[in-house]
View 1 (cartoon, rainbow, N blue to C red):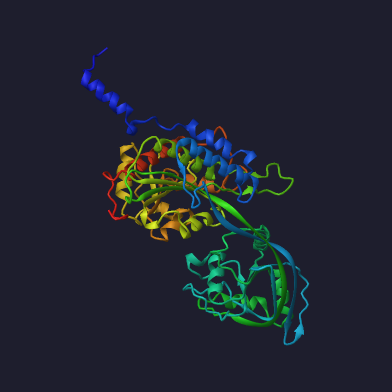
View 2: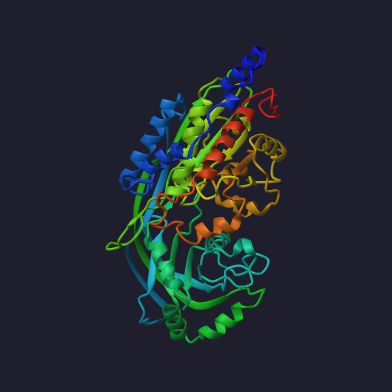
Length: 494
């Protein structure tokens, strides 16, 4: 055995005791959290359910045990997020053309109001094709009218292909009602299911018409035919790039009652207080919610447990919190577990609108989502690459932990699909960093199979190797950005 000089030995002991050389997070550490969060007992962690209550309690207790302090606006762990769901009530409708009542054989129509009661007579119907033109603008005169919109998008920009984007554009142009037409490819069933699923919304931010709904192709064909028009001709006209819509010369009478359910969900917020006041803050964030009981009665497995999406991310945050809370840092470090990400980043938007600290004090927000995909040794990708001046800093820290860098911008395809987007729109430097988005083929394999289904469960084959390495990386990033000597920010008056 070779002897080691005493001074060298003491130096090695000091390094071993240093926080920079702390024990690596293991796959078992992450598995312990995921096993609980993605268990059937938590019922898929849907906001507003018993599963939410168990989830936020678990997170708060884990953070308290780690040494964090509650940091919600009222001094607790839980920041309320007011949400709303709308369900189909009763509805009556009638259509007239030139004073003549039209008889429609089909009853394939679903109508949902913005408020509990909606009533309107003589509402003109305007066929808008896809809703917007090739330049993304609403050309049809829809103000004060009911816009009839094709579900499938033709000759529209990529950012307007989603029904949501076109619906919001029509609302902004003054449409009183927006009614989508499901085509013969099965979109009617998709539309109907979406409207009847009681989707969750953040009422303070939603852009919604006074009346929204869906009809089948059979319904609209019967409607326009009864009014003396030809549906095939209307569809052919709508294929024109500069299509400006056509008045159907049909008026509608609607009386719609909608079931409204308002409730408070919760963001969970914790904090590690820094030593230096007014030096800014680092924010870790990730969503705790998933889809709850998602399969119909009689299905062999009805629960969407969300093990990868995003029990894995919360597991990482718990381990990062425990590691970083073991010592003091210069800057404050906040941890934010958001609600209703699956419904459109709602918890993140609620935080961005009413933050518990000034947003210009946040030097960096690191979002954590869907991390249990990549194996050990995966490259590190950055979602948000090129949107902040921090890429080089993140890459330097990653390389010090032994990670290679994915230098492409391919991962930015997901930039608007994750919670950090809500903060980025407010000017906060916001990134996602890790291995799951470095290999998009591997990611797409998950998105095309277990994603948002009952099979997203924790199993013996769930890949946690890359997740463990990503957790160590985030601990390293936390230590770096929370140290005013290592990272000097222009924010927070520095």
